[in-house]
Amino acid sequence: MKALSLRQLNKTYAGGVVALRDVNLDVEPGDFFGLLGPNGAGKSTIIGIISSLVRKTSGEVEVFGHAIDRDPWGAKTNIGLVPQEFNFNHFETVSQIVLNQAGYYGIPRKVARERAGRYLRELGLWGRRNVVSRTLSGGMKRRLMIARALIHEPQVLILDEPTAGVDIELRRSMWEFLRKINSEGTTIVLTTHYLEEAESLCRNIAIIDDGRIIENTNVRALLRRLSTQSYILDIDCPIEQVPSIEGYRVLPLDDGTLEVEVHVEQGLNPLFRALDAAGVGVVSLKNKANRLEELFVRMLERNAPEESGAAAPANR
Amino acid sequence: MQPAYLQQTLVALATIAHKETTRYLRIWVQTLVPPAITMSLYFVIFGNLIGSRVGPMAGYSYMQFIAPGIIMMSVITNSYSNVVSSFFGAKFQKHIEEILVSPTPNYTILIGYLAGGVGRGLLTGLIVTFIATGFADLSVHNVWITGSVVFLTAVLFSLGGFINAVFARKFDDISIVPTFVLTPLTYLGGVFYSIQLLPDFWHGVSLVNPILYMVNAFRYGILGTSDIPIGTAYGIIILFIVGLTAFSLYLLNRGVGLRT
Image (cartoon, rainbow over all chains, first blue to last red; front, side, top):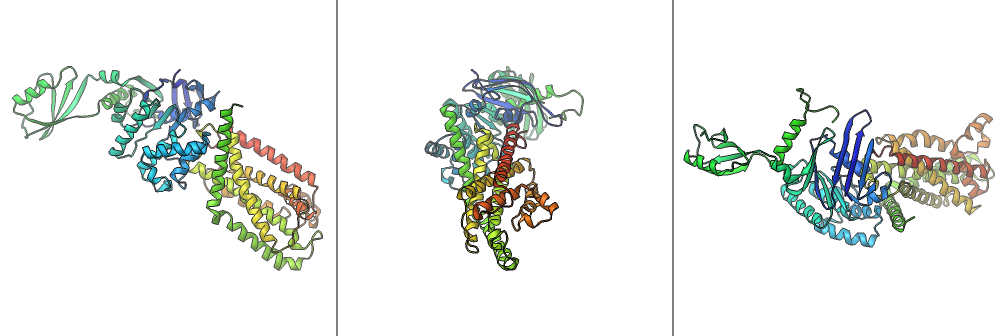
């Protein structure tokens, strides 16, 4: 049984905007799954349909075997949703929000209090439990929505851009928390714009563009397809002429920085030896872009309409 | 019905009802005090100052005659405004999604919100009744009719507020119906006069106003006098409740104004 199964899913909004076109997708139980795509690609529509906030035009959605049409009770009980926008009552306290959510899922107040205490502590919100939610910082609001989504202990946790606008330290701590609950058995489906986040967290990903799934694979398998990588090298002194190194494409970015394109099978040792021989010392090195980001951009470019000026279809 | 489903439904209902009740009690200065002040002014101005010159109506002092209508007016406006503002507020802030993504059935959502509206309607009705006893000698003619009519009226106008909130897209939309429909119908619903005083044409027009039946049925419960048959009043109230409940559930099931 799949944690999540989408079959021939279509969505056309009022006014004729086509958001999804025959989307087929499976998420295995226990997976950490990433749904990637540019703005307007259809990610939030998929999440909206799974969580019943958006009505599908056609197709089938099942959550652990419960079809959202025929058995909405079974499907909804198994889903926890962390939406992109803050959607809690800004006049209620942190505790009230989490406990009310438990109530909507039929969890008795005593059990709900125990769980709320646990999740609010784990997410660093226990000290703010009696604070009215509108006074929380952006990061705290995001964590509150995670605690709220977990209060009924769903088998599938769906997060729509959970770390948008969150500082790096908090983002990393949220990653750790998500890894932990995933290791404890919760299936996680994540949409994100941070491809470093997807590469770091997800085992499997799907890339959606213009309402279509254009890639659905294992992250490692996908990264193996990356034939070249670009690196930025900081060098120890300005050079007048860029050394020509066979097999490598070396470009000057400024006086003290070079960009080098490397085929994955080449490795970096010959490059360093050649630079050393040319009297160029390398102070530091970093990837020009996240590896997944490079692949992502290339795939979207391949999927883009060929006509110039048609990169952003009107129906996105 | 499976035990898990039953438990979920009951706990969800209790949660929504508790949340709605807590809401209007928390902001009591906005929800409970204004009707008390407004209705006190009605008693002072219409009952005491003007009423003393009007003379008896339907065999009762003018103050006694208008007291049931004024109580009913507060029940109608408060049950309506509670649900319309609370449900629209939940839509506007999007926290209605908390309930929509949960397995809470639509009828539970509806009953939960009605509980808030009925609760506030009855509470303000009690407050206004207490104020009325300071101005008029009120005794209850039939406690069952009094209680059932005020309860059913609160349910009916809570349903009205719910439907208004479902269709509302901006804050202006939740004040249009109370201002342009509810208030005129209430004033023309026999709160301040007996329709027996009206010429035949306007007497006939008044009979189309459903609020007339509620006000008169409640007045019958308190005073034992009514311009219309009590059975007809019950029939009309129940007919409206059944119709509005079916329409509310239809809107929820279709996701009108809630799901895209």
